[in-house]
Length: 353
Image (cartoon, rainbow, N blue to C red; front, side, top):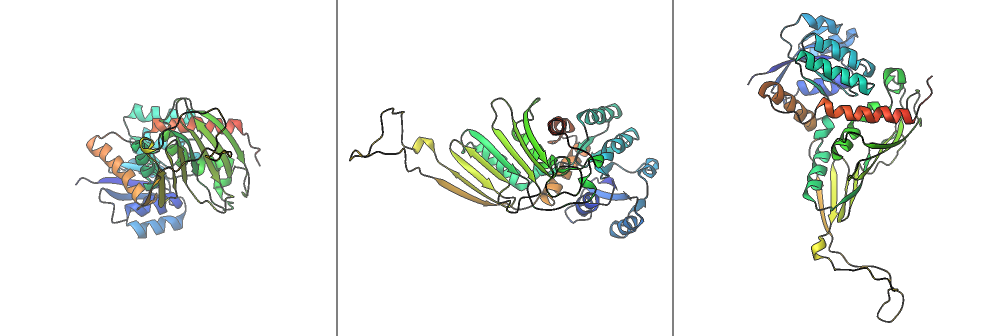
């Protein structure tokens, strides 16, 4: 099997603990990690020991390499676009960590540069392959929930942060940091509408920076359900990730366990609207009630967003670069997400400090 040679820029939480962890795992059979870039000497030394690859202090040192097929851009969020564009202009295929860009216009600019250079550009939205989300899509496709009215997505926890991800200057904040994962899932469920309707509210709850760590976002589009998305750093319970309400039943799921409860309308009692007061046989007032034949299914979901989802994402990239297959995740889809993020921040301007 032909292997692709990879370089990673950045050895922080994403560069080392997600991308690097995959490349040095037994599940990686399609890529060879050839180089790592990091400005911190200790990280370079650790990378050299862990991967046995070349290490550099600056990504520009990769420009003389002719053996690198793909570069993973895991730099600071506010550097994603300038570094990505520089890499594309020097002939590399690029995977950018999320957020893709700080603005919609910057995302468009990067896509244009990729097309001008004939290079692949993709964004690491591996949550599209998360086991829970794939199962959600399967259940919705089955139609057993009927017409879906509302989808709640919770991306919540309780945690105080004081690192660079809390700074607006570094493109931090919950919407750009963790938000791209549930936003991508939400927009996928809506079919990536060109102009989704958006209501949002941002707040600072337990953060030590000037960027938001609490967000309430409502999304919808014509003939689509309402999506109620929370990204919160002040949720001590966080008892579900997905809650879907339909005309024939509901779905509730964490990232590992899902319950689907539904009934078959064809087997349910037939009703028609009655305008006179309802009463029991003895004449006393009655309330509309019936016994439905509820069917309940429970699923335990194997894999996770940092394991199986990463492998599936890199399988997609490999099949595209080597076999010419279409990519399920495209940067054009992520542009819709950037439009939404721009609008969210326009609706909720935050002071800077």
